[in-house]
Length: 139
Image 1 (cartoon, rainbow, N blue to C red):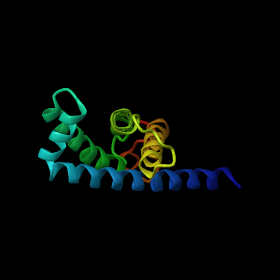
Image 2 (cartoon, rainbow, N blue to C red):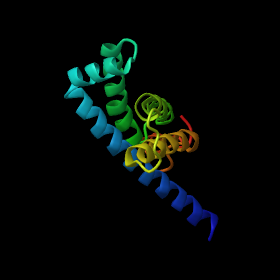
Image 3 (cartoon, rainbow, N blue to C red):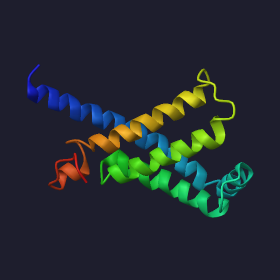
């Protein structure tokens, strides 16, 4: 396979990962924004400090960050923030009964690893960053 084909495949793979991660987080963030009182109560029950504020921070980060990842606009930063959210989610909601056979645990681990990977690799050629004159692999 030529370097040109590998580069195209690499950029297509990044696009597909961004679409998947973006959709998941946009939907999750939108759901939280539309039920913020419930999220605040849930965070409070988990013992998360400043639960009311943190619910808004997480909801907005998931929604806006998900959009940024989806379109490839300065996506390294939101990917790192989303990875942090996944680490917190794993430690606060999954660790007590960590069961790798649980779909929720597996999805959270995948989302963590994909967001870290996207933060490392950048958005690729099929992104707003690339269209704005950047390479799409650096922010």
